[in-house]
Length: 122
Image (cartoon, rainbow, N blue to C red; front, side, top):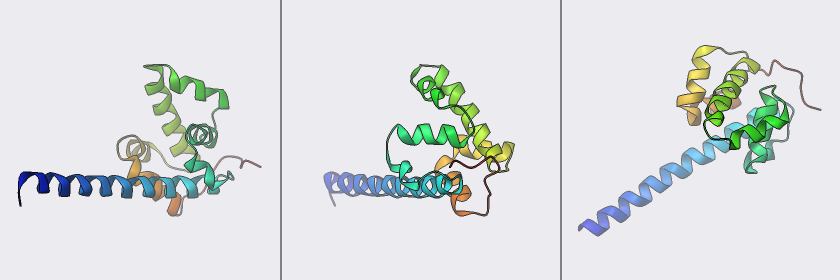
């Protein structure tokens, strides 16, 4: 195997792993949104899924604008992830999981036994 073959194989492997994580994340968000009373398909619509995630966390919809302000967006994401953990009855450790390993912990909440604690969207 020459260097080009190795890079092509490695590249497809990385791409495949990324695709797997993406599908897992969408599936986890889909079930999480459904638990909160929102349509699951919202997980596949860019920007709208951030709006729904913000609403599921119990924050007002206008917070979506804050995602587009540099540096403010980091704080907003941390707050929304904290509120999301609380909305599903979890605490600090789940928040850490959302922040640092979201592709694992969002499906855990979505497919696991976590129940939505806030008033459901109608």
